[in-house]
Figure 1 (cartoon, rainbow, N blue to C red):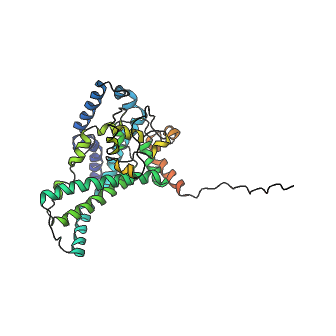
Figure 2: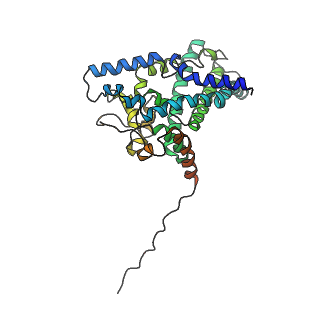
Length: 331
């Protein structure tokens, strides 16, 4: 790579987070930020208890140590995307092509062809449902497998939540999430290419936000990583994860760490018995306990310590010797 190319890519990475403000497929797209703020303000005007609206204006939230680590991660991971992930995004389209070809070889031409409108409607729904379940399941594994939890801890080490905390992700987790996205996109797109005789125009959907994603992002998604307590009606939280339910997931209390792992839908958490609704839960403290203020306090600590913890998770643990049972005294 020429030095000039390297400088250009570094510059592109530095600009990427600012560009997120102008991209509808990104959570911090400026209209989504405004809509989330409006929702928080309306909640405040409704005089709902514990809204924490005023917490949005604290120095600690935006300029505290936890926030500074968030900002460093969004820029650092932009370079990870350019140098390590960007070259592999093409494999999503390749996987779609080979999935379509495999289905043709195995089953011949599809006996029915979906219309273009039907294809786009069902493709959008399928991509949303399969993608949402995949996000839940990978997240579930991140919490259940010690090796993966070592890297996911970086996200949970945040002691205050703001919209940029969404991007506080260890590069290893970022690679896993993008591999998951490429796999889901390729398989689902290839299937619908087959069902519609390749009527699906991938360029009209790839890289754009779906109607489901748009509604999710528009109606308060940024409040998931915030101090604002936005809950949904009790029955609705059985179906959709509310912002406060996700805040419960970030609770320092260990009993909440493995709860509410869904991205958008709550049904996966119900199936896996990991759902906790908002009712009866009040003040929360975020983070992973003492580690948030020691190993995971700094940006470099959040980069390096996960590798240490991951290696430790693979080493055999010494079990304490169990003392032999004493014979009862028969005298």
